[in-house]
Length: 153
Image (cartoon, rainbow, N blue to C red; front, top):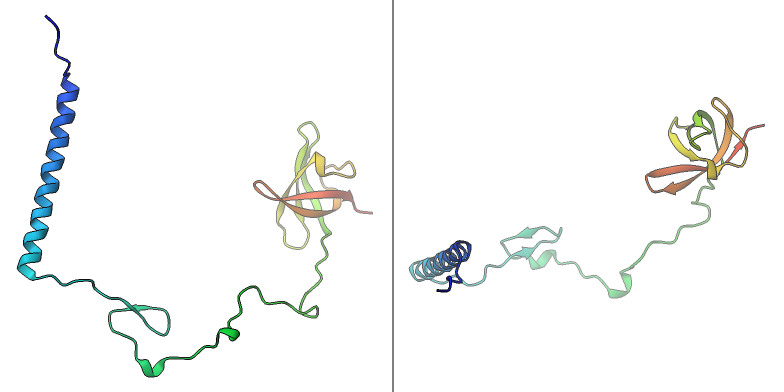
């Protein structure tokens, strides 16, 4: 005699599926009954006022502003050369920690007292703790890194 192919788990899954289907049918009937009772309202409208906010009242046509398509500028505005400040990429700082065996350390910027990571691959000269150095910043995976690190003369 062969065993039944339906296991307990299959039976339970089938019961859950049927129960879900029945709940969905009941919800649909409840929605239909509510729509019949209250009457269909249709699509509710939302309007955008002159400041870009959503409202339920239509905007006042007297406040409408005409904009010419030629006046719309898409993109970043060009800056004048006089507006642009030349920033010196070379910074000065002091080595707060450097481990030569591990090949990394930290440099404290003299201007803003920020700590920057420094790897041995970014060194030009050999450095040690408390050395005064000059360096440049470069974006790394976890923040800004000090590169082109040289001893200050």
